[in-house]
Amino acid sequence: MAEVEASEVFVSFLDSANRDSNWSFRALSASVKVYVAAADNAARLLTNVGMLITRTIALSDLTAQKYGVLYAFAEDTAAAPAGSKLRGNKAVFQFSGSGRGFVTSVPGRKESAYVIANGTDIVVGAGASQEVADWITSIEATGLDINGNAVAVTGGYFND
Image (cartoon, rainbow, N blue to C red; front, side, top):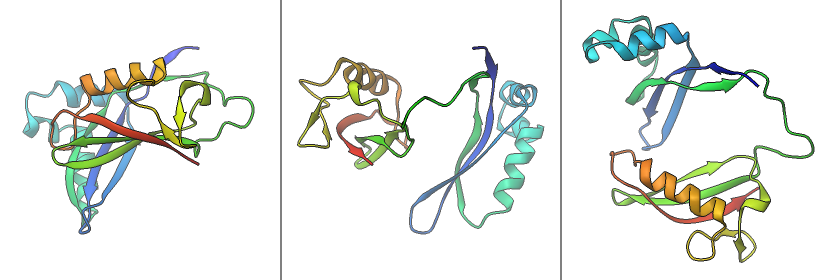
């Protein structure tokens, strides 16, 4: 497998019911690099990526709550997994942060990576699998809530 740049431009919108909605589109890596290298926000908005963001926001009645680029890498030879491994089989993790709870999910969960209690609850504290404990350590060390505050994993469950 070879790693290739696969960056995206994104805008996260907020609707009147306080729900998030996201738009993203893959972008030329060279354009993303120019956007990131710009001196300040005014200069970023004058780049091709900045103009795409501004013009995308202009097409919506929702409030743009954040925008920018996701500098990413992809495996150019990635193939679908064998067998019945579906994205809808998710491991959902619950968080606390800034006084409000939220969730994130990992699609296509690997059953052997979890310790389960009560049939669907993921053990996230004492007794958690090493994979889950390591993931929690990483996400709590680097993850932030929507307001930029530290997060704590409070639970998890399987969602089919």
